[in-house]
Image (tube, rainbow, N blue to C red):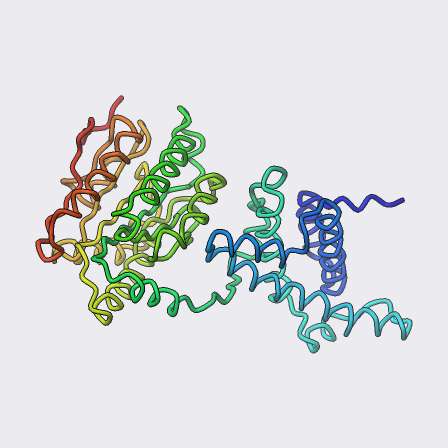
Length: 383
């Protein structure tokens, strides 16, 4: 009897091995692997992915779950369509396979295939977190230029503001997860994820901050990736905790790209505050990195833009070195006064929490909420 146990690692190895194969054969293998995984999930009582994700979304209010659910509908529809409209008619007519041109005419293109590989791969890391926590770099590289439409979160974002008109404290975290972060030693990357997870739980458990603080979290290893958008912590928590547990180190640090994207989203959120008559404190940008940016020159406009909004008082920038070995000079280019190295990440996040609490005792118009370093802090690299 054939073993139907699904293996994400085998799937990824197969995708790599068939990279140059005719597109018909790749779609065929993709569909078979997808249905193999469905049988496997049902066999271990996890339920069909839609049911599995529906429970996840309802229990946790996860936007990441909603996105994944929408993506899976695309994958399911594409694989069903391939078997119904291509493979089955070929079998009935005795045709071994369709040519690349025939596949393209029917809509089964290289781009659509790679989109499905991306969706499938991201779901594998969700459904099999222990066996397959990280998508191989080679697979990510294959679909790196493929974009997937996201749901329009505008309605939910505006509902947050309508349901809770409390003054807001917008805070952006850009977390450096480039490959070097994992190889520096002293478990710095693991400590960063652990302490960030505790910080998220502390915000959620605070009656004051859970209604006031809006986090925007992104990573910049290998390019910009948004983890959560501005919104209520109750809609963010599960996605942030998942990220802090499973965040892989990947690529090189493209900090300029991440800064530019984050500022774009901040402008949009501030417009929503103003449109809904919500008062807000001066936003914070927390950059957690060791300063090894690779796009200081190629993306100079992003860094110049940051300086403009900082000097005009539109944002406060806090570059935080999270490792003992660092390019502090680059971090100081983001803000020469605030860049520094905390004695411990635990102490740093405690300082952030306490400073945010202090914001609740002032008025947004004062615009004077600053990060206060109660613990150890230095502006020099420790050797």
